[in-house]
Amino acid sequence: MNIIASVASQGGYTIALVGILVVFGALVLLYMLFAQLPKIINMNIRSKLRREGKYECAEEDDFSLSGDVSAAIATALNLYYSDVHDEESNIITIKNMSKKYSPWSSKIYGVQNQPFQR
Image 1: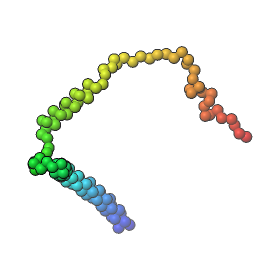
Image 2: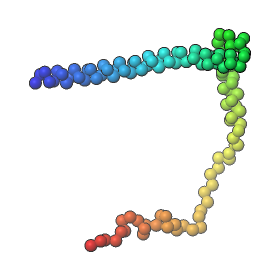
Image 3: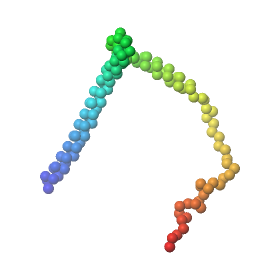
Image 4: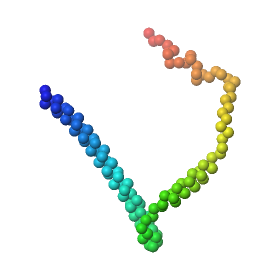
């Protein structure tokens, strides 16, 4: 009986250890992917520039933008898209209906009023 209990408890540790290894392995793979992503994007940009015949632009080291330029572009886009919508009055009006009866809310057509079959 002790052998079965020890195997069952070790099985829990094994599952936990495998789960932790899978999670950390996935995190390492994602880190490596995101670390190499700018290089992959730069290679794609260089190949497009070479196909267009712009060799001197393709030999540039880095095509990334600085943080200041990215913030300025994001601010400009935010200001542009926030002016697109009209200002609302923020007043809600509720109008009463003259006809208060609606067959959609009628209780006589409910599911419980089915005829009995004997």
